[in-house]
Amino acid sequence: MSNFTGHRNAGLIIGAVIGTALFTIGTSFGITREELFVSVISAFIFSLFPDIDIKSTPSKFFYWAVAISLGYFYYKQEYVIGHVIGMVSILPQLVRHRGFFHHPITASLLPLWIFYLYYVKVIDLRFAAIVYGASVVGYFTHLFMDRKR
Image 1 (spheres, rainbow, N blue to C red):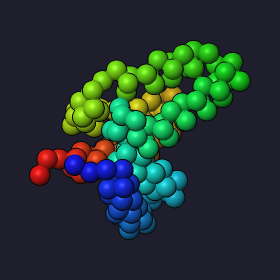
Image 2 (image 1 turned 180 degrees about the vertical axis):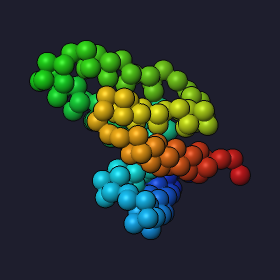
Image 3 (image 1 turned 45 degrees about the horizontal axis):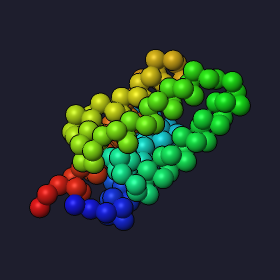
Image 4 (image 1 turned 90 degrees about the vertical axis):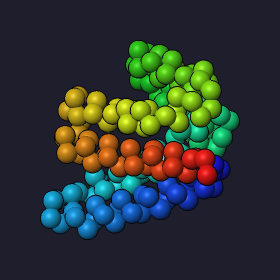
């Protein structure tokens, strides 16, 4: 079992490994700097994400991001998006720790959100697939660090 420092360090390492791999193959496959950067950040974020179901450093960042997002969408008068964010943001408090957010199926399914950005034509399919892969690797890094020894 690992604490925040262990998960942060593992996230930084896996982010560096993913960044190095994408940079190395980038010339052959035309991977952009944006794809590389977003993938590294996504791997790091998802290496911390499963602990949002307890009072932790990642949950504090998550709820600050929710608060800022709600303020932004209220300002933009996008009330439906704000309601959805508000409802989804309470889910981590309704599940037990090391339950739903610490399950391999969740690690595979939750990062699928990136394909919504492809669906609404914000990013292309390759970008979505690269970020999804990096996110899943980051998530499984967290689960690996939490395994019972």
